[in-house]
Image 1 (cartoon, rainbow, N blue to C red):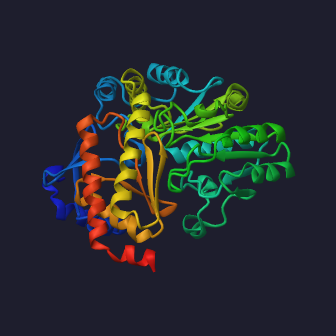
Image 2 (tube, rainbow, N blue to C red; image 1 turned 90 degrees about the vertical axis):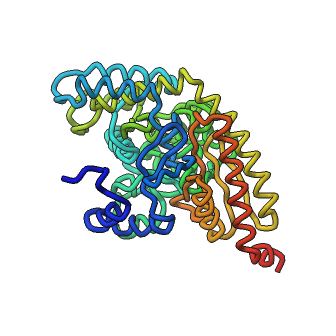
Length: 425
């Protein structure tokens, strides 16, 4: 078997085409065919030695890559007891549960750990059914994963249509429209479960109107619906608060966490419920299980991640960096592309730059890669470039990001003078 060092870039691409996803290999070639081999803090390194500031990663890297607190916990567990039997109890899981419960909203402390955000959503759907809520309501533009249950909630036909039929009795209502939600819930009192994001990341960083989450909570209470808040991307400091629901002091019945929960070292997610909602799983502990749920090495990563976020003050750091970056990106786009309709918006370190023309968003995304910055395009919105950089960025990292964003925006403007012409036509 060949070592990693023997797989040069061409061999890596060939291996993807032969054994994994040829489409993934083609997409990588559009961006230059880079092969990433190392990461640390806000930076990743490719096989040719080039360094990129990682302002992407789909929200995983709030602690940056290989944060010492996370690595220390994982290394210690790796050399002691990485995977358990699932027969006996495990101290790493107990500690991770207590740490996570110590930072979740009041009343949410019963936890099912899993390996990904979409698994956390599936657990929430099953908990809802066990609690008598078989009708699901999600929001237009929402993204909750691509396993079949979660996909039923992810309201985008591109992802759903090839896999129909999906779950029955699923309704999608406009995001930010509490009145529409209330009308749907009123038709089936005591039968529904609502799932909503505090800010819609994959829809293009859509921030709801003030008071929306509180109105959703009130509507769910009024009509006997369970409320699930999907904080897989927004939680653990990403929005400049521990959780997006904290802004309006809303307590859901179920809270979902993931992405950053594993400290950018081990994939892990969690479904966190109230005592009342979780009680059905207490009665039958094997009703919903997973071989790798609460695996000791993943639990070590959770402990390291929460410790790092708390001890390094990353929640407040995300808030201050987010304000600075949002202002800088707004200023830069106004200077270079001010004649083309655009908007910069977000909360904390979840920031989106939206353009009227999807081609401009793609152009900026590619230009940023050329300027050694990794960002993301949004899965449910092809005209938004999304930024989810680490809260561990230094001041020099931030200056680098702002300077390279300025260069990329200038290149887009210079390469596409017709944008301005079309705007005035």
